[in-house]
Length: 295
Image 1 (cartoon, rainbow, N blue to C red):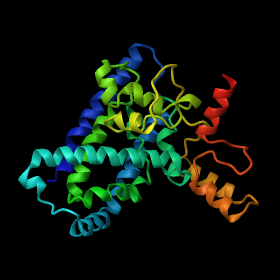
Image 2: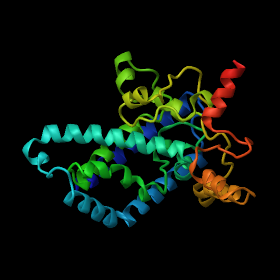
Image 3: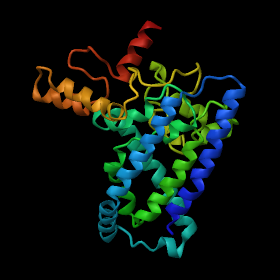
């Protein structure tokens, strides 16, 4: 029985308990934090992501095995100094996740896969299950540098799985701001509410998985101030699973039909979401610049 399987066996009932508790508090408090259709779709997204992950796992393990064979260091640290090894893996995985996540927000090609995670307009624990369905096909690329340091696939992905469990608890409105020292170092529910907001001020902010320090270091941090509005800037308006998964891919195909140059067509695929050759749609940075000029 692998560590990943043990973690899955523990996390599923824990998630179920916390979702049930949040639902109960939502009911007795007469809040409007849940929408059944959204929560069900989140579950389907989680299942699809898991199946894609499973389908290509042997290929990814093989790629990481090859990387270990050509690693800069021999993969012995876990045996000789396990505490130091796990500390290195934790920071390395969290750092690589930041850049994976930031890339998903700054390149439309990757945003097309990630956007379904942001499509929920209610913010609750089930949104954590709303996985980026196609992420398994490219996630591994961002973790290969850790493999070249001599750490094996199972170690890296076990740390990823642990940190994803931490992320589950960020998807809630039940928890307000935490003590200042926690908010300074770690990603918190307050930080992640900002990340899921569609307000111009909050777009593409707070990418960190466990540590918020990367956002503060690389200029993507935003404090939660006004109450966020959740979802996409252009709502999905569909409960069709297929359309929800590929909606942004279809938008890209529509933009590629425009009578523009090859260079501009490539920009429609790879530049930041919202980029357009004629300014008819705008990126988050352009929208913020306009907002600042108005204020």
